[in-house]
Length: 164
Image (cartoon, rainbow, N blue to C red; front, top):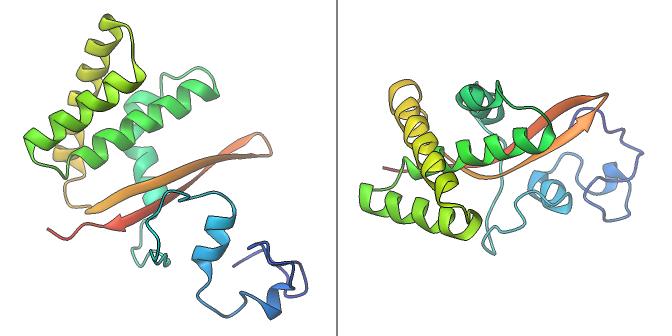
C-alpha cells in the first residue's frame, strides 16, 4: 500500500504497526472493510486487488459522465453515481429481473410519480450506454465511496467479476 510507512499504525485499525500487521500480506480486505467500504459483503467474502489494467473507479466515472457532467454539488454527484451503479449492475440481469430490481429501488427511494418516470428514463438511457460502450467489462459494482482530499473528489469502488 503506497503512502503507509512500515512503522505507522496499520490502517486496518488493529493498533499494531503496519510492518507487524498487514504489510506484505494480502490484507487489503481487512483495510478496506475497516474503512467501511463493502460493509454489506457476505461473510467469508475475499477481497483482492484488481488484476485489470483499468480501475473500475475510472470506468464508473467515465460511464457516469452524462449524469455527473450536469451535477451541481456533492449530493447530486453522489446520486448520479448511485444511479449509474444501479444501471451498470442491472445490466447483468435478465430483463424481468432487471425491471424488478429497478422498480423495487424506485419504490423504495422515490415518492413523486414524475420523479419515478424521469428516473426510469435515465436508467434506460444508462443501460443503453452500458450495452453500447461498456459491454466488454464484466465487473459488478459491490460498493463505492467518495472521499474528499484537497478539495478533490476521490472515488473508491469495490467490484467483483461476473461469470457468465
